[in-house]
Image 1: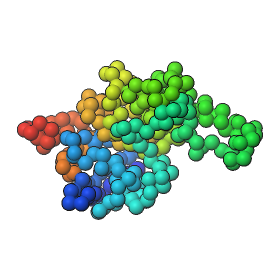
Image 2 (image 1 turned 30 degrees about the vertical axis):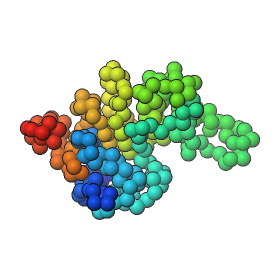
Image 3 (image 1 turned 90 degrees about the vertical axis):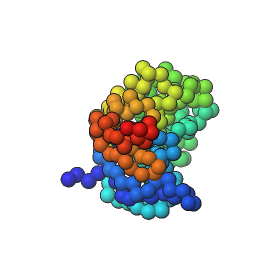
Image 4 (image 1 turned 180 degrees about the vertical axis):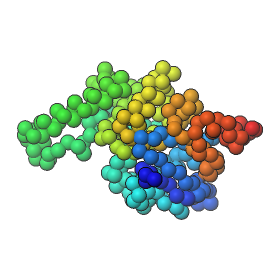
Length: 255
C-alpha cells in the first residue's frame, strides 16, 4: 500500500483537565480531500493545531510522508510544505492583494538580499516570475481584478479567497482549510468547491477541510471524518456518513 501523505495515530490533546482530542487517528493521501466535521467544540480546530504544531500533543504521533512532525515548531512544519488558512484570516490588511500573495511566495524568490536590494538582473527575473505566478493563481480563483486593492478593504469572503491563493502559492503537498466557505455567497461556494477538487486531482495536493457548509463538504470530500467531544465517531464516504446514526445523534440529538 502507498504510504499516506499525513497520518495521525492516537492523537490526544489536553488543556488542563479538558480533553480536546482523545485518541484520534486518521490518514490523508496525496490528491485526496478529507473533510472534518462535527458540532461546535468537537475538537476540529484542535486537530488542525495539532497537525501544524500550534498545540503540543499529550499522546500519539503526527507523521508527514512517514516522518514524525509532532514536536516541531509551526514554522518548521510549514517549511515541510504544510499550509493552513485560519478562521479569522491572516492577511496583511495594509498590503495589496497581489503583495499578500507575493508574501506567500517569498521563499521561492531566489537571490541574496544584496542582489535584491541592488535590483540585479537575476533578482528582477525572479521577481517577475513571482508576480506572474501570483497573477496566475488569482486568475484561478477568479479574483485577478482585485490585485491592486488593499486586503483590508475586501469583504470577508474575498479575503478568504485571497488567503487560499496565498496558501497554495508554493504548491504545498498538504493544505488545511479552516472553514473557507464562511462569508461566501452560494455561487462562490460552488466555485470554491470546483477549485478545491481541481487542486487535489490535478496538482495532487492533499486537502484537509473543516467546514460547516454541508453542501460544500458533500460536493468535494472523498471521505468525511466526524468528531464529537474530541473523539472520532465516523470516517467514511459522504454517502455512508450521511446515513450514520451516530452522526445524526451528534448533530441533532436524535437519529
